[in-house]
Amino acid sequence: MTNPGLVFWTAALVNLGLICAMGILGVRCVRRGEIARHRRAMKLAGGLVVAFLLSYVLKVLLIGREDRSLWSEADVLVLRAHEVCVVIMLIAGGVAWRQSRALLATRSVTRDARDPEADPGVLRRHKRAGWAAVLSALAGFALAAVVLAGMYGRAQAS
Image (cartoon, rainbow, N blue to C red; front, side, top):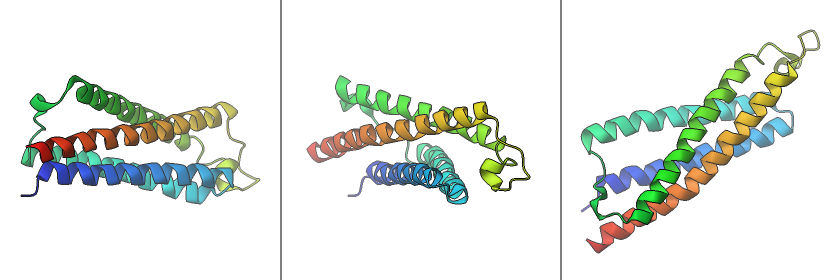
């Protein structure tokens, strides 16, 4: 019999992997000066985050939460570390998005010399927040893989 929780969390891991891939692609694009591609990659990553959050609400309503009574303390600790990474990703991604709004009409984005220069502080905050979001997403992905492996192991044992 298929475990719907495992199906959901496997799909969620794939989703987080795609978020990480879009973050890495976005970083590579901005380094090459491909701002439009950077923005598309970041919008896709943001859309995947929103899709996960909505699917998680549906999952809790339809399937329920995981029974962690069989989880070891180490399993729960890894889960909590993953959740911290996800919260950091969400906050840093939100800060990066907020800072990006102030960059839209600048020549950093438009590439039009008639537009004003971007505020260096805004650029710096956007870059730092973006890096924090990407790095925390990558750490969250690695930890999520460990959590999911444990879930598969417990499912096999029962």
